[in-house]
Image 1: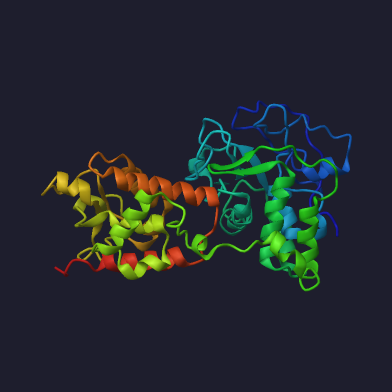
Image 2: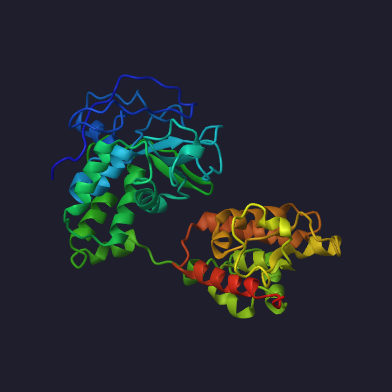
Amino acid sequence: MQRNVAGTANDKSASPNSEEIFSFSDLKSGSIRPDFPSSQAAFHDKQLSFEENQVCCDQSITHPTTLSISSDEKFLDPVQNFLRSACIEVFVASDQNPGRGAKPHQLGQVGLRCGHCKHVHRSKRAKQAVSYPSKTTNIFESVRNFQRTHFEACVYIPDELKTRYKKLILEVYRKIQQKYIKAYYAEAACEIGLVDTPHGIIFGAPPNLSGKPSKKLLAIMKMAENPAASAHLEELIFPKVDRQFENLKFSHLCSESTRQVIAFLRQQKSVFVYPSDFPTISDFRFVLFHQFDPCRPPSTALNRRKNRPEKWDTLSGLCCRYCARAHPGERSHRGMYFPLDLESLHDSSLSHNLTVHLTTCQHAPFEIKEALEELQRLAAEIGVTTKRGSKKIFLQKLWERMANYYPGR
C-alpha cells in the first residue's frame, strides 16, 4: 500500500508545559503533514530521535505526538491513515483550556486536537477541534467525530489536504468489521504509551520502539483478516461483559447505603422518572433525575434564544426538590435548570451541572450525594460502555414528559 502522507520533521523545540507544544511544517509539494516525528517514522528510522516535539507526563519517558504507528499501513485504509498521521495531534492538557467546549478532567490528561487550527483562539475553531476520549476504546469515535464534523468545516486545514482527502474517500477499500478497527485503535494507543485511568487517558508507559506490533495487536489484525479461523482469540480481545455492567447496574457492587437509596427511590413516585425506566437506564441516571421536580421556565430563559420553543406553554424545567422545599414559592433559585429542547437535554454539560449541583447542594441529603459519587466512581473504574441508544431512548421519554407537563394556556 502506498503511503498517503509523508515528510520530515522541522528542527524546532518547545516546552512540554506549554499548550502549543507542536507546530506544522510549511506545505511542500507531495509532503503535507505535521512537523512532529510520528511513531511510524521512528519505528522505521532508528536515527530519528524522540527528543523533539514530544509530550511527556513522566519526565523519564518521552512519547510520539501522533496516533500513527508502523502497522497502520498494513491494517487501516488510507483515509484513516491520513487522519491519524496528517491531521490529528496527541497532546497533554496544560493549565490553559485548549478546547472549544471540551475540557480535561485533570492536568496531564491526554487529548486529541486538530493540528491546523490549534494556534487560533478556540472561539474561531470549528466544532470537534479538540476532544478528550475518556478511555482508549473511545479514540476511534473521537477520530470519526473529527472526520465527520471538523475536517470539512475547519478553514485552517490547507486546500491541498482537503483535495487529497476527497480523492481518498472516493476510492474503494477492503471492509473490516468496525469492532476490530475500534480494538486496533485502542491497542495502537497502548503502543505509543497511552494508559487508561479513572480520570481519562494519560501517557503512563514507554512507547513500543521495537518496530514490531505487540502480540495483542497482531491478534486483532489476524482476527480481522479471518474471524472464523481466529475464533479462539475472540474472548481474549473481546471478553464477555456482565450484563449488569452493560447497563451500569452496580447494586451487587455498591455499598449498602447506596443500595438502600436505589431501593427507596424505586418505591417513590417521581414526575419525570418512572419505575418502568429503571431496567433500561443506569443506576446513576435513575438516582440523578429522581431528585428533580417540575417548574415553569421564567421568561428570562428565552433571553439567549432567537425563537420561542414550540412547547413553551406546556414545558417544564428541572428543579432541585430540596432547594424548592428550602425556598417555597420562589420563582427562581440556583437549583433550577431549563433545557428548552431535546438537544439541550442531551448536552453532557447539563448532566454535569445537575450532578455538581446535587453533590454541593446544602439542602440535599448526604445519602443522595454519597450514592451519586459512588455510582459515578464505579462507572469510571469499571469502564463499561452502555448499550448504544439506551441513553438516547430515555432522554427522549424524559423530554416528552417535560415538554407536555403543564396544560396549554
